Amino acid sequence: MTPWSDQSLGSCAYADPYAVPPRDDTWPAPAQACDDIDYFLPPPNPAERLSYVLAPRDERRLALHAALTTAGIPPLPEDGAVIDQLSGLSEDVNTVLRRWLHHTL
Image (cartoon, rainbow, N blue to C red; front, side, top):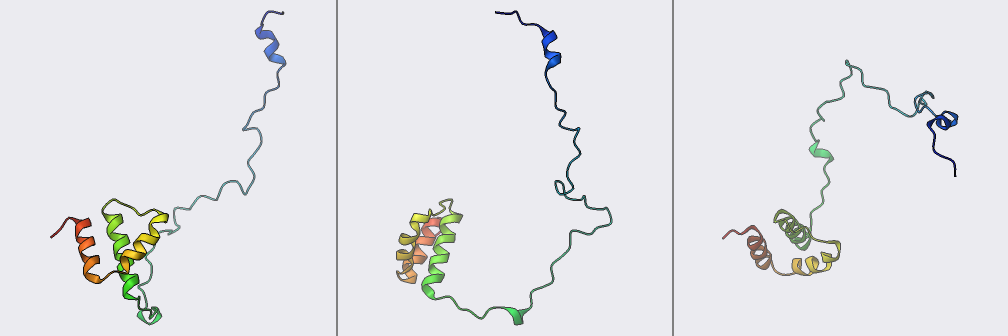
């Protein structure tokens, strides 16, 4: 067994990661100071809105999903069937469920 020596380290190859210039497509070009990259969107055009009305069951399903998420109980994907069944119940039942979730009277 040969003893360790730091003189043998000089024979090791060393690769400098900064010796090779980066390719042009590696980094995006920096934004110029005069570029206005932050702007307001135009107001929505009411004529371009979709004229689609949700069914009452779908409205209750979305409201129940939102109430669960707001209450800190985000529904899991496998909870979709149960939420769908609950949304099929009457509006009064859904109102009570949402009230319970919001802890209001």
